[in-house]
Amino acid sequence: MHTDRKAQWAVRQSALPAVVRPCPDCPGTRHRPTGRIRVNASGKLLDVWLLLSCAGCDRTSKVPVHERAHVSTLEPSRLVSYETNDPSVVRELTMNAALAAKHGYRLDWTGTWSLDARTPLFALGSRAPLRIQVTFDLPAPVRVERLLMLGLGLSRPRVRRLTTDGLLRLPPGLGAKAHRDFEFTLHGPAAPPAPATELPTTARWPHPEALGA
Image (cartoon, rainbow, N blue to C red; front, top):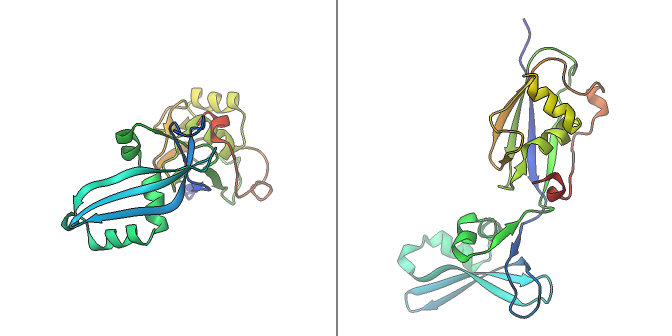
């Protein structure tokens, strides 16, 4: 009786996405968060903005988070986090897809993630199924096929052949872009032949767009 083989991969955050929208002062379109949130109070009404800096000219611009919101509608702890420029809230607002859609800009995830592929310490040629849980520290859209190529150390034709032969079973398709946790199963001796100790514990791919992400 064998013990199920399991491994975990993690898509780690290495940077925040760029906000892509026109700059009124220069031809640039890429903006980065300044790390600051501005709160303006008019009586009991509040305006809250995420502050951005243009990568081309350093012009500061604002993304409205709350407009003319009554102070009673905000949790006190949330208001404090705005007033103190809480890094976790800056991160949350910068990656907020709903906020991007509301204000008509897009997020560029290039260079924002790396893959931590923890290879199991047993014979990779075993025929016992290998279950791999992929977790995401950030909602970067990563193409599944390229994620598998990077994590397994296999070529694109080899990954596609595994799928065709039914040895690689995963919920999303190879061409899909995943940004949430998922699990897939590898059957048979399909993993790379090199010993586990010779494989890197962390695989980095600095440009997700080069992966088709």
